[in-house]
Image (cartoon, rainbow, N blue to C red; front, top):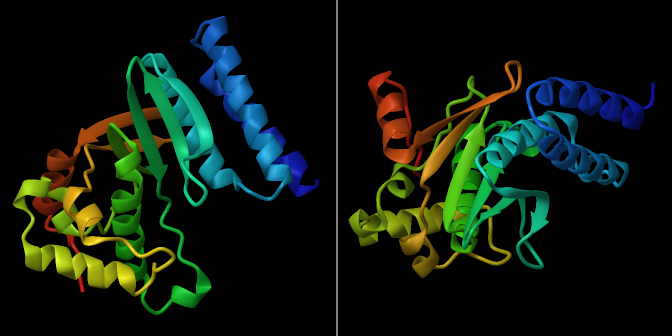
Length: 220
């Protein structure tokens, strides 16, 4: 079976699970998003692991009353995973699966911490509410500074984040002002097996990780 055929077959199977308990309006919206992902896969833009999480999250947001778009361009450089609007407020979701490129195999934690920091800094400026999502088995090594409210970040902490991001992302580089104002409000745990999403606010997520005695921050 060709990869494109397998991709479409997997998404169709997921859609049958997602639409068992929804009305026709929600089903039609999810099918449109599925077709959009299939079109993007033909252009080699998306992969199946990421796409199934996007669809599960999309259903969650549609049921909350949002109009949802997937792989939505925010500007000429950034494309977010899910862009949602309800009333006058927008919500941007970025999904993290924990993928490490081969060239970062020796420093995986440093690389992911920086990627998460860059996402929060860059994407949150486009969002009334910014959310990071991940599978339930993955603990995000988020720089702890960015989990704090902006008013509680010190100049030293902001400079450390800038130094961290500048090691990997300089096209364009993040600014001190962007770091100072960046905000993440919620985390979503996307359970594809059970096709459900659990929402956790940022403070609760940080406390949950720390209460487990696990390493949360990885600022260099």
